[in-house]
Length: 177
Image 1 (tube, rainbow, N blue to C red):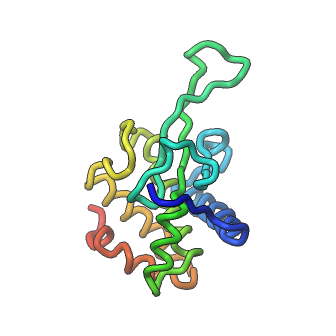
Image 2 (tube, rainbow, N blue to C red; image 1 turned 135 degrees about the vertical axis):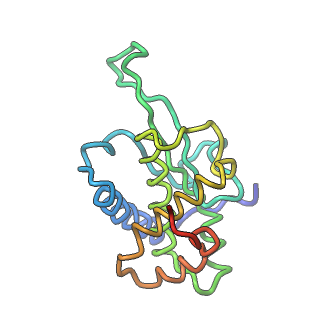
């Protein structure tokens, strides 16, 4: 892995804002209250808080499944799936710096919405979680998630979001049937 890089304080504020917007959009699209599925079922971390195995080269983020259990519940029957969205700061910052039309805020919104669509699909058993990184997810599933992400974000009036759609155009060319 290349030299470690992390979001700075201003960039972390942009991540935080993108998380809030993405969560609201996901809740609205899937018609779920925030307490219905999100509470204590996932977390979003940036590079500085990731374990070595959670840092990967290639994707801008990945979802890793863990088994969660309340402290006072020692039995396996009380376990639940817990998903960690691992943002890859270097990959994101590199793409933004190398692509004139990409800006951090809309790019983060797309990435986070995309990853939360994965989480929803895992939680609703629309797609089975495999213990692999996002690069190994089937192309059909990735295309489906990109299409859903586009469908969720397309009506949202976010400045420079069209450029992000252009960046992902090869994934969102075909409408979901």
